[in-house]
Image (cartoon, rainbow, N blue to C red):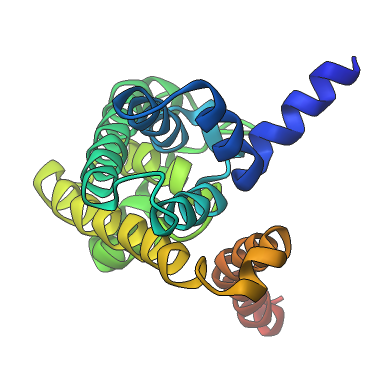
Length: 217
């Protein structure tokens, strides 16, 4: 049981995860495993718990220290995230109609799909790009886009932009800050701060929605 708990702690902590992977893999095998992790987080609904932000930051730190080639890892991870988005989108497109074709139920309401479709018609570009920077939300956004029937060409365009922006920003941030002694000495705390900041937009959105709903209630 202790081994299972320790394994979970490693998987959920980007810094511990990258060190554990680097002990077992080197070069392209390491890049492939990192790509598989990012693919799972963005393409498989069960991957929502994976530490995308903290892992990318830790990868950036390792790039700055010369253990990982930054010129190669960014394209590899962008492609992995892009492929994950595609899987999530087509999964939602394939299963969504069956899920929501039933009459209104406790969990699935066809009206929700229409509202989601309207949302993507108005804010699709921002929704896809912003979701990249929000844990859990980035896992389900491609699926919901597929369920809502968002045009694939439009989805792909902003999926690519979001993947490039998110992965490059987080890795470059780790690359630049990783050379600072304070960051090296407090890496766990810095990564925790990164996670909190990435959750902040979602928290603010929930707070804003509740404030707007209060007068009508």
